[in-house]
Image (cartoon, rainbow, N blue to C red):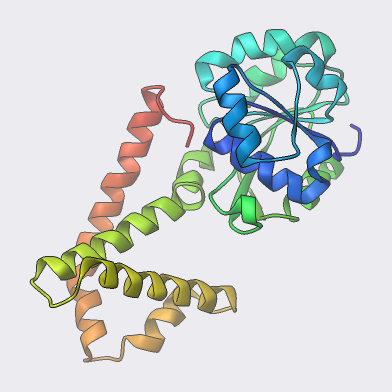
Length: 268
């Protein structure tokens, strides 16, 4: 497999834009090529990720060593039909779909395959990425991919059967935490607390930022809790009252992602 210094993105949706911006940070926008299906999607993409080159799908293998498939599951067969004539054993083909079995993808292309699950924040150089090595991926090839991903994320290698659960926490996680924070502000305002909604959301956003920086500085989640939740204090009482309900709510949310994925609606 050749060095991963040129990247092709197929699909210009949100995750395609996120990865195009992220890989632009890693290798430079002139080494990132993208394939779009409509003039309007290409125009939006070029505005969001300037400098990335647009290419027809059949030409992409000639421009990129790493090809990332950011298309819905139903569109993959047609996309692969367009790419296949130019693919060689040196190309690494990656899908961002948890529903795509790597064994099936490996039968459709001549080279190694993998899954790559991005997350919000990769475009600014933060957040997790998940890597599932597939058939044909040697240890050196995995390390080359991880080295590239480390330029804009914290990559984790997971197995294919861990993908859905890990995606809930890493890729869905930023949106789920933001939704939980918004609900926290809404709940306080709903108690007729004398706080404007905008101020409540600013305060909880500051709390999110502080927790993130503490964890980023090496503190564990339990240590962050222990710093604030003094036994017998107000925070400890709130955590004790909410704990069971929070666990139940998250289980319900994670079951919803699994059900939605099985229905064929979900990339992440």
